[in-house]
Picture 1 (tube, rainbow, N blue to C red):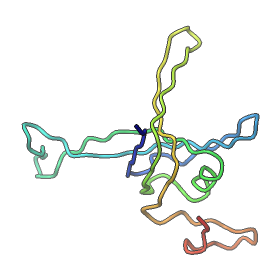
Picture 2 (cartoon, one colour):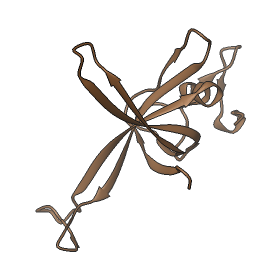
Picture 3 (cartoon, helix red, strand yellow):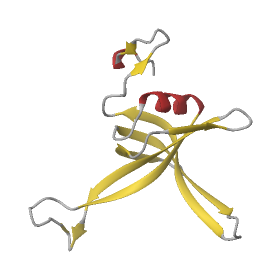
Picture 4 (cartoon, rainbow, N blue to C red):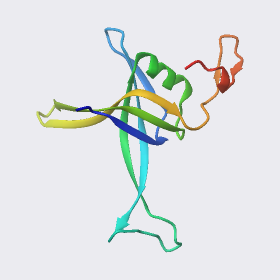
Length: 133
């Protein structure tokens, strides 16, 4: 059996990157996915006739090269497709309470909307077509 997840949604915050003491780069961001709300087998609509959406938030983690690409080219609001795996964690907080968490470890991230502009070493903006992936 395999642990595979595919999510398409909007980035909820600009990605943040940190480095471990051993030199591993870890990039985090949140991803919002939405789905229509159903009641009695039918899509729920608001007073104006629009579908009511339920939004779920996912914590996404990417390592090293993929994380660097995300940090350089992604920003809040971009649409992306994340392929990866679900990872559950358990820890004890400072008060001694056991805590649980869930995150998606990204293996690939595809940009579904235009990447943010980046500058090369000369200070010139790089077109999306020039970005190596």
